[in-house]
Length: 77
Image (cartoon, rainbow, N blue to C red; front, side):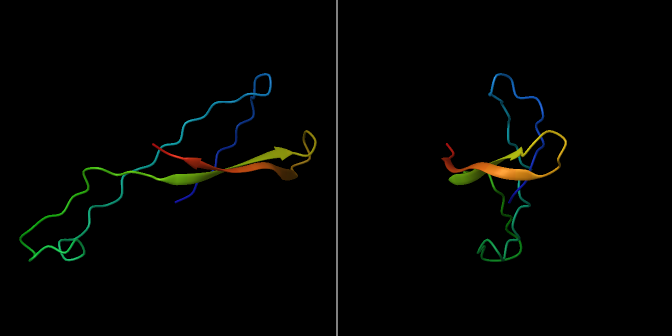
């Protein structure tokens, strides 16, 4: 999964953001390996392991041209 956000109000070189996502659809009984179609399968605990954050900055205000200033891997709890 991926996404992006435009954040245009850093304060003293700092900014805060939150990442959220919608839960995936539950698998079909067959996809989950259930013995037959009378069973149901649901996700009850989803853990994300790692992610990548890429920060881009406009080369000069109003140019509309962005350059990557940081790409880093984050480890998610």
